[in-house]
Image (cartoon, rainbow, N blue to C red; front, side):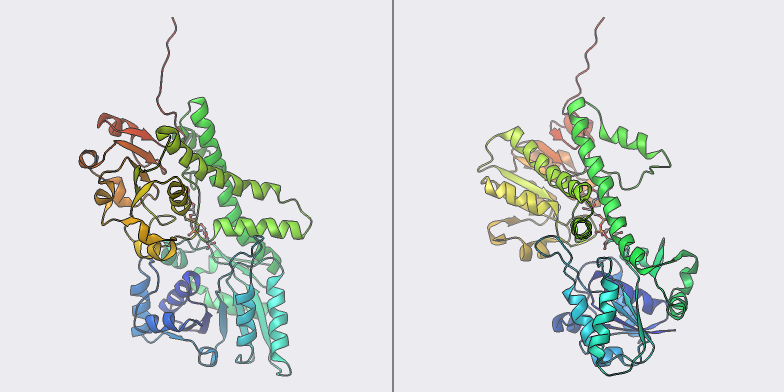
Length: 444
Ligand code: UGA
């Protein structure tokens, strides 16, 4: 059992804290946001993540998990202190690590001898070293022994608890045997998943993983455009290449573009890291350009079908950047909504979980119509736009939808539906990476 402090109660901090408490450790989570801590102290999780509220409840009941805004209380007796703070983008795309630095400065006043600071935030190569320097400066003449290590996080929103409790790797950027031992004790249940490396490699591994995932997606999205032009089917091509074990079949699903708080931001930051070190960033930049192009191409399909969009009504199914989360950060839905609004279209929006977030985050949201379900959104629509592949959209009754819409047209941004089934019901169906209509010409 270890005494652990987690600074920052976002996705990474809260999931890590709740999981470490579940594993038997004594965990105190700190956040500077009073409202968040009050909510957590009353058993409420401030964002949607399946299973997290139950885990937090269990941790609190067992008195292994508590929440505070006080650095002094949070760090009393702490052996290990995680930094899980947001690292958003600066205007030029580089990583803004000021929250990490601010926390480093504050925690220095309250740490005891021997404490291990573990950075989980995504920060550019060299930042762990800068954090160490910041803490040393803030300690002034207090003689306290401490170490700072890198332990990047790889959890996915929507399955964060599963990822945390079943890690496929635990990356430890650590250069001191005592720190390594402490972390091996903490992560004892996953000892065979631990990879120890130097700090710079651990820091870069995080960016490399997200950039590799983004590369696959931009590759598939770009290829899907080519499929449409040459009359090929991206699903068949995907299956063909995915069965090569050197390629693998995961993370190859084309769509309307990737979003979320991590992939776009981390590729952007990787461009800045490359530039800063005099290395070309063209390759990384292209990943993001293709992603923007993918969103534009979807919009152009809609415009190509209708021409003038003003006063047409569109049902938007799905707002979050992916299913099982209410997170709208960099969600393709936001880009599409603003493009459609600019053309004077009326929008009827539905998402199973993210409507409250959407109302807060979309500009002039009161001008939009938020609906109670996908059928409500379809009322009088000129087209259905499927943006997020929530499981409940898979089993929609399109016969019923047909009786609600004004025009039977579906634009499927996730290749969720079968063209033959929809066409049989009289719908015009557009998806990603397939020719609009297969015309077979036989010559004798
Ligand atoms: C991503 C990484 O997958 C995690 O490993 C990482 O820890 C996390 O960022 C982070 O850095 O914190 P996440 O942002 O939760 O996780 O989202 P993903 O599940 O990776 O999805 C990202 C985007 O890719 C979504 O918009 C999703 O719709 C899209 N996607 C994913 C596809 O378009 N096709 C696919 O085959 C897979």
